[in-house]
Image 1 (cartoon, rainbow, N blue to C red):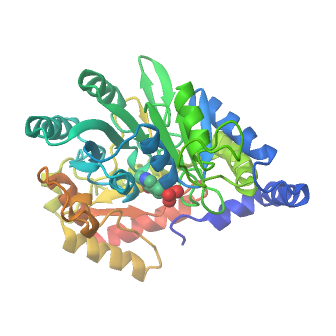
Image 2 (cartoon, protein in one colour):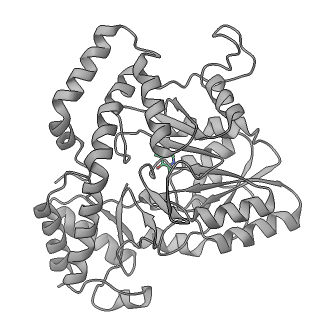
Image 3 (cartoon, helix red, strand yellow):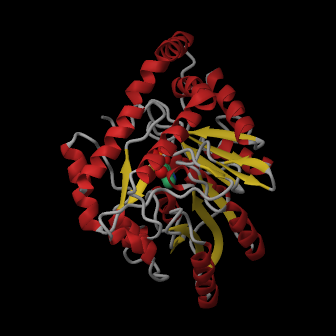
Length: 393
Ligand SMILES: *Cc1c(COP(=O)(O)O)cnc(C)c1O
């Protein structure tokens, strides 16, 4: 069994993808071909923002956002402790201080209470200027954007949505469905192959309603170009999405909208229903200890996940490692996302310390992500659940 079976997806889309690749090869327009603009337009429309600017990867998308806002030395940026390294790396690379915020133990997303506490500490200390919040739609589930928006507005903070794992997710806001990558003042995503919408290499995009920021993004990604390519008005980067990836994404995006988002939600529901049926699910953390119970992902009312991961929790690191090893013995790959919180990363040693993130620490030692993708079969899900029951017995 594969953890995320991209080859099986290719089997389903082979004819269309092969045609798309061939037509780019024949066109000779390998950079800035028509597929790039077409993709940007389609993505902006789906997400519900005015501008989508493609770029080379999700990390560059975050960097470009930081550069647009002039995030730099003296600034503090709040970022969840439980995330992929890029979310915080890009802030530090610009010279700003990432302030690590603990996460909610049920959604794994940024905890607004701890955000408030960490913000107050930075403010009271007066050493750094609180500038922005980077919130992450972890494992496909949108962060608590309505609360974050209120907090950001109240305190004059910019909101950056790291939607690398969140593309396709949504929140019903006042009865209206709002899609991931529309929640930040600037939002970003990644098309790394294993993300909810992935290409066949690296790729990324920036989303915003702001005309000026969109223009800046278009400039920054091409060496800070001004009115034309050889007029350079700022220090930028070389960060383009190539035509081949855009053409592949156009095919995959169609399948994503038409069925894959639906398929993966069915797969996640099946996991959860089977775990509940077998009596394996604990209602709260305290119950995890009794007879090797587990906790299933929690999707708040009104939220839709795009299931970058289906992540369960067990009692402690010993149980988690034993379950992972047992599944491996049955040829079932299960992964630990993430084993280390940002505050504990070697690279962030020596950064200002704004206190512990105990929930993140506990998640790092107890989470396990199971195989999930749009084309996983019922039989495969059944065999994972059966193996977990067997491990438990
Ligand atoms: C994958 C990922 C990124 C970086 O995307 P790349 O395309 O690999 O650069 C950033 N943030 C999060 C949360 C991610 O999962």
